[in-house]
Image (cartoon, rainbow, N blue to C red; front, side, top):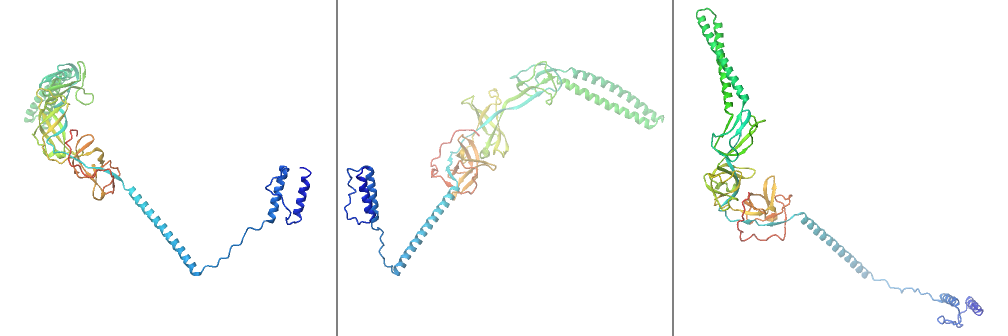
Length: 461
């Protein structure tokens, strides 16, 4: 700071402190002195701000006085405010109640299950009923030995056609042979005792007539004679038993047929009977005619008559039909499958048909049974049996029991319980109950099919 600046600042400060009214010309604050340093300029600015703050008039002014409003206007104003408050409160409550009702309705709708449905597809009336069946031998029997021993040789092998009484195998029975010899010797001993007892009894009977012996002694000799007779009868029975066992050394065919199995070879130990260590020798079957067992659905049972002609087809004989006839039925419906067990006999003189084969039985029922098909995913399997859920009036569920016919894979033939105009629920939940309210999906068909489809092919039961 220069010497000239210092006295000037002192003069200004002194003038301000003495309370001068500022008539003296003051330097323009906006005009920047050319000869002052930056520090001096800042000091001047600070002093100018302080000076102006002392002489600035007050800026706060008193608001103008407003005359008070009349009483009537005040009451109207208060009434309008209260009306606005009441209306706004009512609108708020109304909106809240509307929201609660919509929420309750939406919650109720969510608790009601939504289901889709379809209409059953109507089938044309059947003229022929095709059912699966297994071809079985008319008579089939395992053959066991009735005596113990060793197999000497067999005379017929598998596939051999034999007649009744034809020799099949021979068995060596050394133990039975020795038992038979002993039984015959024992019989001779009993016979000799019988002869002696007879002579003794006759002699004592004569002595009793002369009163040489007592009646008691004569009766004892007579009793000994009768015991000897009983012993001889027992010995004869034992001999006959062993002779019959000797006869079982030769195994004969019990009926005419074909040997389907041979289970022994020469030298094998043979035990009598089919229990315990008993060993089966052969398996024999009568293959003309053959039996075919099949299960007829309940709806077709009235059309199956004993003696009615039918035919059988096999996959290995395409285009060929084998004539058959209904031999017998069970005359009762199976409660588990709701079917009628039916036996069909097929003549097999040339042995072309083999036991154990799978075939199809064709029945000419010509029935007018009303049948429809429903998707497999519409079924409900519960303890009451097969059921479907039908949407009734008021969109309420009706659980109906059905009779299943043939299985077409993706659909099932229904022989009773639903009609083509019923709305059948698809993929019904397990919790669905009879009489339950449901919502119907919008994507479900609105009308039942006008034209029934062609009868689907299939014969699976």
